[in-house]
Image 1 (tube, one colour):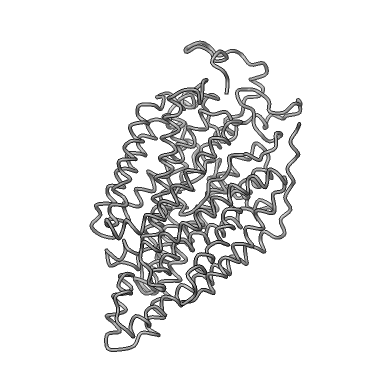
Image 2 (tube, one colour; image 1 turned 45 degrees about the horizontal axis):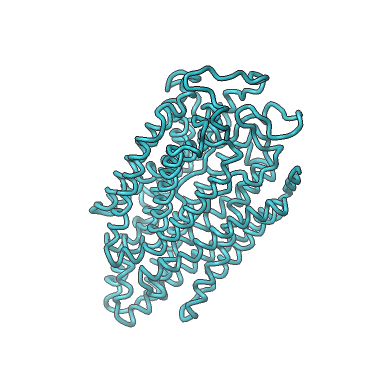
Length: 599
């Protein structure tokens, strides 16, 4: 970070930098940046280290200065990774200013609330859906959030280049806070799902724009330090959400889980309004002209086709055999829309000037192996985190408080493993071991969960969650760094955005596909195992409310618990199969070894 005396005075013309015109990145390179930031809304996803392990030859220069000792750096090597088209720093004093620390605090608080919200939802969704008598619709509580979060981020990043950061951050926080109030006051499951969708827009936009703002304010050599703060906040927020979610749902009512988030979001809103500079990011607007100019080359058709096709695909999977028969016209129409829309999306991506998902990146090893193994990891992670609280409450008959506390274990393990992975890569300079090792641990973890049964020691249920958490903590940051290391500097922004987009789709599919397996399997096993005069009434009650299982009389309770156990085992076996496929995808990869640090 430059010293105060190095910064030009306000309003003064910037000093000329020799060779700056030759080194200036092209507009095409700058346009990649808006789509390059990590997505928001994962149920349990450690933040990737921000290029902590990148070799000096791959680090971009900041404010026109080289990061290498030699002069052999090409033109593409000067492109500032994960930065916007604004000048290198709007705060010459950077972290030395109180204003900067207030902005950083706002960004961290927003991340905290989003992580708290996601694990609160994971631990208490059985309670929420039971209150609405709609346990069969549980997957939509997370799916709606993830879908809108994924769809909103690319246009928000591009729009911030035209309008500046401040109005969009403030707007996203208003949406986030308002949607959170809506969640707390929702009177039906349909209203609650719509509120979660609105939350996805606000949370995803707030976190993405927060990352853009930190990128604006910090030179790249200081970002790893501040990224570590984000990692700590992730761990604390996720652990508290998991630990307190069930307890709050039982002691105060689930609506207070959302009510307590509102004051924190309002505080973030006030800090953003008072502290974020009004002109931050507006330099891109002066370069691109109008808002229309900033959007002229954005892949709107591809974005719409992807969102619509995936939404209807999940609708068809969720409703088919669960709420509606597979032969119902709406289910058939939903799957047909996906069957037509997704190929159309792929075709559009081959012709778009700046596609949101460049297909060339997933057509060749090792990047294709990295991206697809990471997609499968996201599927498994969200499938497990979404369904393991259901296992605790419907099979082990644990309370919501107890099931929430159990989620603290994988959260802490994943966070710790993610941090150690970064140090391990830095020391060994090898990239394959965290990715391939992560797939091995995923397979071991999902197999362990598939083998669970009742009447085991309580410690076994906690230990069964450890292997998959280790796999998640190793593979997510390991894949992120490996993708960067196998890409040219000019490709890194678009490669990062492609990885994030595919991972987001994996998160959505993990919840939706596992819910498909569980709900259809549950209906089958309930009809198979439940016997007696009250069979139809029992099936209706337990499919509408997970909490109803604990209140059943024998022999009905044993029959229902057996049905839930069999249905959830099907989901975990499916995850184990996916884990095996992921191992085979990662095994043949050949990744470069990072260069030794120059002394």
